[in-house]
Length: 225
Image (cartoon, rainbow, N blue to C red; front, top):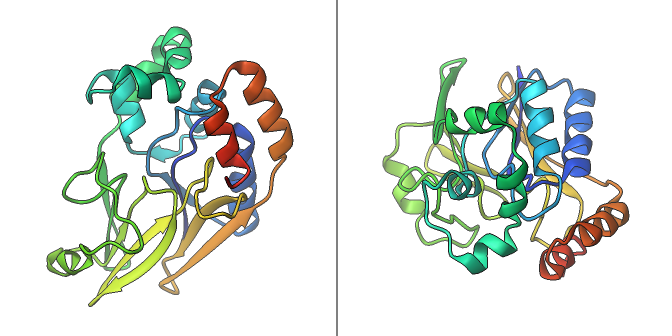
């Protein structure tokens, strides 16, 4: 089985559609999203529509927790995250779907134990595990064979003893100077991880975001700045 893993869509519908198409071409049979489907960009509700329609497995990120009031968010960040637009327009069924999301997920495939978090196993919503983190030694004591993390917007593949630690990067707002949408595919049969980068119509997304009132600082990140 091939599992597609994506994270940090952040209201970027075109980026999500590009990754879903790439998953389809690669024979992905199961898709798991590591949170932060909403925020930053102008199509958070359309992103939720698509995820719900396709019944994609999702866990919560910090942006969902901000919207639901489960984490505190300063007024400055709330504005930058474009969450007021989501709060004012979200349908009740979408809100119920978000409320029901777990903060982590564990699955077993071919005797491989796999865990999924937005942040980290110790702080599922908010901890950043960057590629240069000094915390990788602590992963060695954990019981999983594969651990997938999001939140940083940086693709990553690390190994600590027998534990593989993977971040698929950001689907909707990469921060590693590659503006293409980022995700990963886990081939459970071959026990291999593949990263994928997909182009999409960034200029149209930038134009629409500007018209919608998205922060100029957020828009510049789409251009790799």
